[in-house]
Length: 214
Image (tube, rainbow, N blue to C red):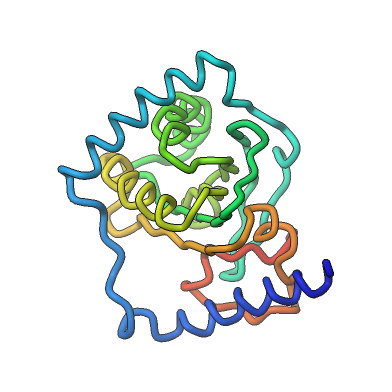
């Protein structure tokens, strides 16, 4: 049964990669949520986060911290923090990967960002459907990623498009993007993806797909 499940996951990911080749002509570009939708959603999230933090529902775990992830575009990044709400597992799972590049940050500025980024926790844990997040440091191109588990694809996309407004305040123009994998748990995406050499790199469009350790 586990082997069948792994093959099904690999098939879904392969179809996504093949489909991405014509993405720019076949699919509309990603856009942030309208300000009148995004900012109230962020405000509700901060309020909900305060309650979750006060009740001790949010946990920092170290199971994946320090490991490196290799992506199908040839880049790699280190996991520097892991945040979970409860046990971190969704029923109607959706894996979400968000990426961005900070504007005007270089050298030690990245170290400072990693330290202070924990203060951003209230900006996501209170969104409906959040379950867990892996925080990835900047890769070789200065690109940060968050790899999430979400309860439901619609909720995941609502979060990604709302978060866009926050990220746009500090990110390089045109660097924000996200990818959804409905029906896939975060740990399935990061642990059961084909290893290097088993999947054909998808170029820039495959920035979101983990393919194993370097």
